[in-house]
Amino acid sequence: MIDGSADQQINLDIGGRAVPLRVRRHRRARNIILRIDTANDGALLTLPWRTPLADGLGLARSKASWILRGLDALPPRMPFADGAMVPYLGVVHRVRHRPDARGVAWREDGEINVTGRPEHLPRRLTDWLRRQARSEIAPRVAAKAASLERQPGRIVLRDTRSRWGSCSANGDLSFCWRLVMATEPVLDYVVAHEVAHLAYRGHGPRFWSTVASLTDAADDARAWLRKNGEGLHRYG
Image (cartoon, rainbow, N blue to C red; front, side, top):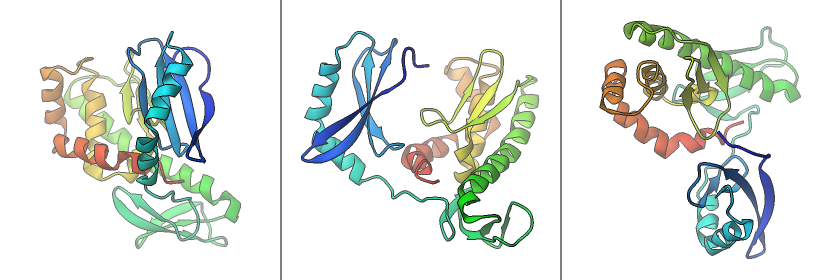
């Protein structure tokens, strides 16, 4: 959780290129952390609560070449539009605008069909993907929690970037809806990970043993997320 005011936005001049730099402060941070901000095609600078901004900016400027290499390596953005190629459970589908068709959206023969006016397509496709994410996640949560004889709380879907899932102290489970674009084993692993937290809050041996009992190929799923997870935020 981030304490304090909203993120501060700064434009960092790197060799004449304006790079958006998001600055946030964290009470628990012990060191300055700089990473690529895929959401804004820029960089994210996290500062300990009392660290002067100048110290963080100095680090960012010293890492200018690293920032540019990271930004240039980002996958291209894929807006939700007619003809876009969007993964669904890891399988790439073509988005097809069907303005005169009935319904809202559906998947058929390798395509995701979306009705309505062109300007409504991004929102309709996002809403459809969120519904599909819930339909994939909710039954998995129920089955895995039942196998542990635990009762989950609410299931909430968000567009989170720092976490793929979380489990609150009262058992509410939160997931990033973009998991529906990942492969099915990856989605299943994240569900297993959060359900296991219903039994064990920490990440000790018993927790990881429980995760392994709830899903297959957890190591492969974590590796997939490390390699491909950021790319899921380039869609839409």
